[in-house]
Image 1 (spheres, rainbow, N blue to C red):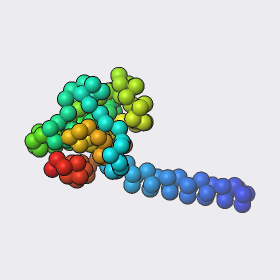
Image 2: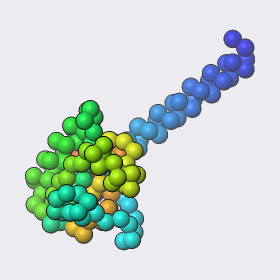
Image 3: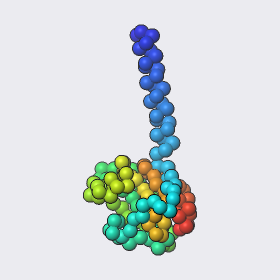
Image 4: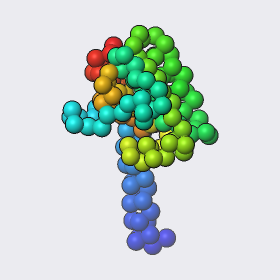
Length: 141
C-alpha cells in the first residue's frame, strides 16, 4: 500500500469514527424546540384529541424495531401521568404530515404542550427519563 493509500484509509476510518460517535450521542435525544411561533398540531392533523396537559406523538413504520420499544415507553408514561395523551402515526400513511414536520426516520417523537405546540423532538428511541423531563418542560409532569 502506498503512503497516499494509507493516509486515505486512516482519514476514512477517522471520519467514520467521528460520525459514529456524534450519531450515537444524538440518537434518541430529545431536543427543545424554541419559540411560541412554532408549529402547532391539533386533532385535525393527529386524528384524535390532544391530552389535557401534554401529548406524546410518535411517528412509526411497520418494520421499525425501535418503534416497538418506543411505543411501550410512551404508553407507560401516558398511562401513568394524568392528562398526558399519546398518538402514534404511521409515517407512510401520513406522509404529508411527516414531510411538513421534517420526519426523516422512525421513530420520531414529538412532545406537545396543552395547546399543541411542539416543545421537544427526538429522532430515534428516547429514554424514559428524557421524555419525563420534556413533559416537565411542557408543564405536564
